[in-house]
Image 1 (tube, rainbow, N blue to C red):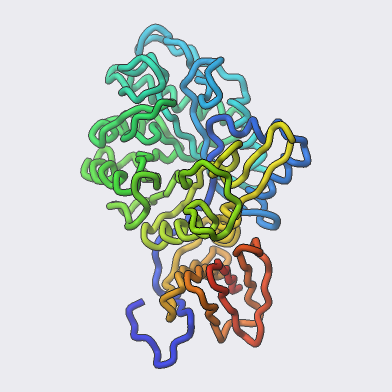
Image 2: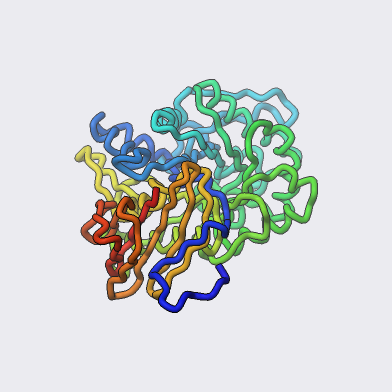
Length: 428
């Protein structure tokens, strides 16, 4: 939108002729056995949580579920997931000895539940290869994939997706490492950008029917190195359809160097206390999340935003906190910050031009496949701002300290954006 401002500009200007990225969706991760927390709740509580995640009427209407591919043997601690081949079959060239329990730490149950709400995008990613495939001999503490195990590891990942297909769930997007630039005490595995470039040439040809995803870097700036390396190699570039990065080491502040789809695939704020607030300056409130989603969409041009985690326990920064002993859960404003975007901006939507006259307003707009337009306005200032000339048929939803996607009326063709609030306007 480079045309000059009119003499008396409206608060918001939208330009349908300006087209940016196409949206794949919004989602959460339920890895590290968090599904088991939900499944242990009474049935009515399970349904309420599923509604909060996936329902477009009652919750966020999420459309992507990120699954964790396990690497640890059975009986491992809580934070690990069970492998489909926990024991060395006798070397990289030996016939594989896969095992499958049809449950995968309740991830199959969760995926099937998501399907009932219309979710069609399932992204599976491992935190590590099985320990016997790595040079450190364990799934934890980093280590690297041994070169001779590359093809066997690629087959291992594809077999995981085949087990899900047997259960009636189609894995659409497949990764091969999580945060390959960071060594964690839990399951983790290192890849340099050059090693990742080499491995996608092995995985791509055997992962038919799925989008190969790379590389889940610990930060967005760090993701640029992996993207650049793969984009520079014509054979590797052929196989990678989605580039991903996380928001821990560095936030999303610009696009990755590619014309392929990019996803902000994992982030939540650090901290040691459970926080349900909308705005308190803590950096873990709902307002912070709304700002982060807005930046990812407008600065990073991401096609998807995936939050970590959907639910957990204790002093978590997840969207929901589950109390196992009491059999109850609590909802944070972080959930409603995500929902203000995900419920209304649907897969296939295109971000269009949008700008605000007031510097306190951060705005982005989208056109959905059904023709509706969605305008997201985060008022960062202390004073309300009014947008005049809005259609009386517009739908307006407010999210702030007291409202969670509460419907607001359009009064005399005007919408007022309260201070420190996120307002969603749907123009049909």
